[in-house]
Length: 216
Image (cartoon, rainbow, N blue to C red; front, side, top):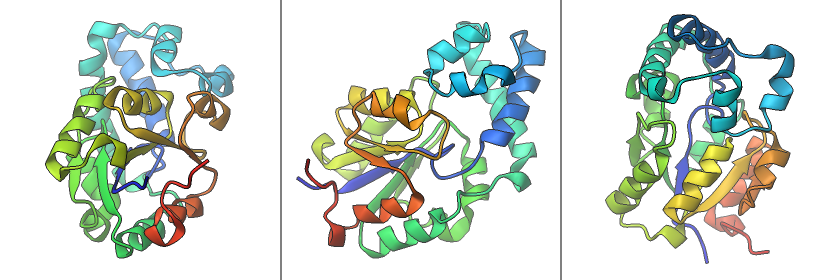
């Protein structure tokens, strides 16, 4: 079995947004009345899922949509400081050249995604679904599958968070975990991903020439 479609998460997978996330998280905490990011336990937080992190910082669930909108706007103010991870651009170009279908599902905004990717890389993606709610990626994944006419068994979500793994499972597709994002690779491995990518160059294994989704 081989994948015909790759669905990339954006923040922490393609783009190194964490430094900006930390800044806007603290701004949101001050505005909406929850705790600033616990820097002393930051390493511990990288082993937790999104609900556990919210509980640790006393984030009210009912405020999450407003908080997310606020953070996307504040991130746009910092857009000049946000870059793709080293090698991501080259990897995407190589995958596209091998006719691998590329899409994005993200909670970030269309404007932020466009600004960070730039027009050349953005053009590589057949579909970009933005604005997913904190736990709303499964519906966005299903939308991409329908738009591309791809069966779930022929798609993989590539992401850096436990919630990405759970979203992939909910949507009935494979999950590929990257080791350079927010959650520790050990925490992601516990979600039983189909693939673990330790380095950006490992994404090149997903081209048809190197047998997309190696068995075993």
